[in-house]
Length: 368
Image (cartoon, rainbow, N blue to C red; front, side, top):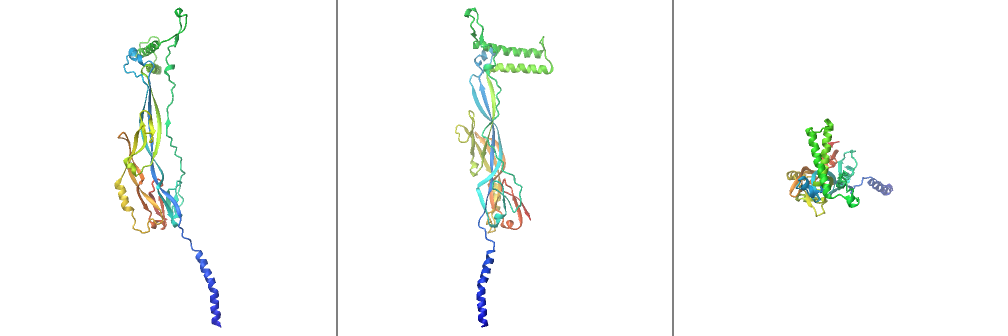
């Protein structure tokens, strides 16, 4: 009878034990199979180009230049010519679409990201990060300022002269020959006045000191303005352009970033009316091969957590126009380097790892 009671008690207690066992199993932390996506950075090049537009406007009396002033090479056709004055290179950083990864499992709790989604650190605590600035990349910026000069408003010879009894006192239009002769006379008068001032031959007035310098300068400017009526006038306009370019493996052969024409100036790469301006990249092969030989890990679990870093490459950058190199620079281009997994031992061993957000390289590893 006692044995029967004991067996019955054990049978009644088994469901309760099973329930307690099942309940304790619910308390086990779940295994996370999802993670946090992030990207490694790449470096782009920003080309800032300054071009000069040279505009020539022929003078209205160009045909009289040799006859009245002895100037034999006066041009009588307008023209526009562009010149590349300066090219500067700057770099910027952005997420690399070819290096997007996901930190998996417990490693997802450890990552710190930049505002643009690039890896900034692992188990690094609160990192000081700034917001993403807006890069205003205008295609053209002109610095030309009009000086108000006009050939039609400059000559002081009247357009009409009073008539006389021979034409019933009707106004007579002054011919171009007369206007050109009057302008040439003004030029010769300015030259003679400058000579008299310099030689001290002026009887009524001879300025000295600052007044002397100002007077000479004014006479020189008047002569220059009148002379432009014969030889023409050249003005210069400065314009600035900027182009963004992200080097890839194909850039070693050269990529067209923009085009240039002496007639039209700086043009987009799609405008075939201009000659190509190319960027050629030459990575440091010895550095890349050295990193490649050390990137492999003997740990079979390497990369299991999905956290990677870059070993940035160094490259020579050349800007080429008409087979001539106009700009050279040596800079860090992470996208040409090697990508390697961060050792699993560092992820969960109480270490703090910070990453350079511009290149994706390891900045520091410290033991907490």
